[in-house]
Length: 186
Image 1 (cartoon, helix red, strand yellow):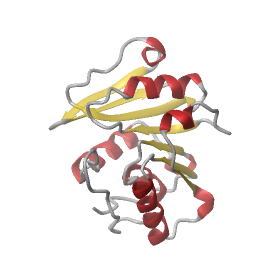
Image 2 (cartoon, rainbow, N blue to C red; image 1 turned 180 degrees about the horizontal axis):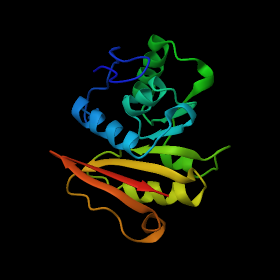
Image 3 (cartoon, rainbow, N blue to C red; image 1 turned 90 degrees about the vertical axis):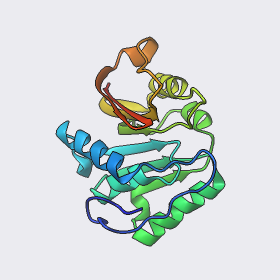
Image 4 (spheres, rainbow, N blue to C red; image 1 turned 135 degrees about the horizontal axis):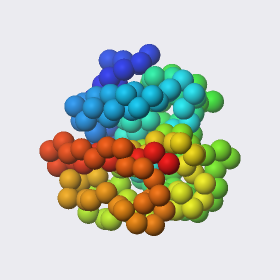
């Protein structure tokens, strides 16, 4: 897989293999970043969090485009090590990222030093983790006012309408094969 834009454009990144890992395809990543740019995302000042990060390709794309900070939250030590290797291979300055190798819900139980402007959430398919993760992130101040929240889920998942998630404005609901992309503004 390769980075599709920014200072690392064209650079190869390693991806995770095994059950439950499905790195965003180039087509989906191109569409995602086109949608974000069309909504005025200024990557040069963005604080980004990649929940259920896997290979971290979405947050790596943001760092390539100048994001000030990117957090990668990934439970698997193997996947977290791969993210660290990709960051080292790209020579990303350590001041601009944090790799958190913990269960996302343990991380979200606390509060961040600052909320995030761009939130990626790509939960494992078939586990119904989207709504609980979003509710916990909203409840504990992880998502800034005006932030964009992008979820990549299986196409059978409907956009949640109730609870704290229902208070966010749904901007996009698109299908790409077996994948659905949802974007909200808080």
